[in-house]
Image (cartoon, rainbow, N blue to C red; front, side):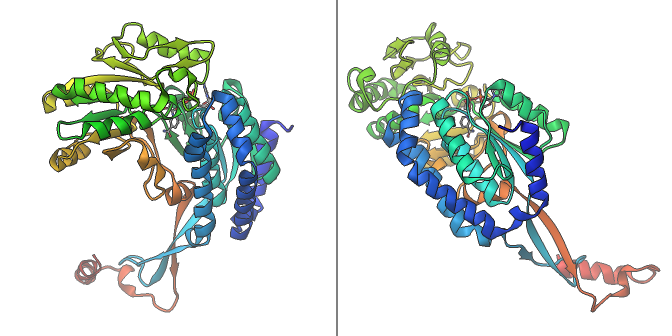
Length: 459
Ligand code: NAD
């Protein structure tokens, strides 16, 4: 195995060879990648099952299926996306033909988390390659089966000079971050995001940070509680709540709290049975350290449902918590597990004082049939993206950019937005030689009036 610096210098040299600028070459890589992933479909399900008992259904809907859709989209649209786009000239460029050229940044570092370990490593890789870059990818050390499979796939499809997967933990990540990159794409926690941003700043490297936070879910008194409970029982406990855009906590109109809790208990039992530990559909927590972390959050909480923990099995039952204090452990950090605190409100100010107590979240959800309340909420709070009357689904539309704001991240991707993220917009004005009006040249005397008229005409 070559060292990081060897691979990096190979990639830099290959990028300079101009080969990655060739769109048919990129297409051939993407098609080969798709074929390899399709032929590994069952190996992917097995790897995720071994890593944290993720059910095949969830791996299909939230990893494999999304990756294949992204590949199909890139393969179908790449020629169009990569073409220079002509724009109208302005007063100052006329007469010229003006274009935006899509330029690959060069050599890209992608660092991926463990919670959707296949999707969140491969999806940025697809668009980075589609845009004509070379990539070094570091998958998570916590999902060793999936990460090994990712490395095998990348190694089989890409020459090392185009893409490589380097496995390892903090030490390897630190070494990677000490290198000079043309772009860094990081998905993970806020605290490591700050480390990545600091490393990027050293070389003024542009960076996308896909981070997390405490994403609220507001339920007002016009919502259909049965339907709300059903949808929340899906979106909150998918991946055992280890989802960056999971509803971290509920804020419900106080008079509905008891009815909502009853409805949610019924739905959870429908999904996972009376003993969720026996359910084949509830993934495990990624490791004992995270079980311990969540268990500590429960210590001073009022558990009203679930609460069972088996550290050895990395199991935490779907758990509901009644009205925690905002300064409790549970409400201080992102929960990232199958634990749902239920807070209440009576006035709009109550909602404000909860949401504005935290940094800008990655997602916000509203369950309501009151259009005025919905629009007000969308516009009032600052958050990465969200859904009205459901959870998570905005992630699944490639036409919607996905990314955070403030502490939940910067930059976005998914679909064409991903291609744009990994491309520099190079502005080119192609000036003809057939005309060279004398107005811009000194001496300026007597020309200003005409210039002002021309500016008016062009604006
Ligand atoms: P993490 O930040 O611990 O790790 C992410 C990656 O960073 C891993 O590859 C890890 O090896 C590496 N890393 C860890 N410590 C490092 C260090 N000191 N220096 C450099 N690299 C380091 O995150 P995680 O536990 O894998 O994932 C959970 C977090 O990720 C949650 O906060 C979640 O909200 C967030 N997340 C965000 C998104 C999103 O799209 N916005 C998606 C998934 C997860």
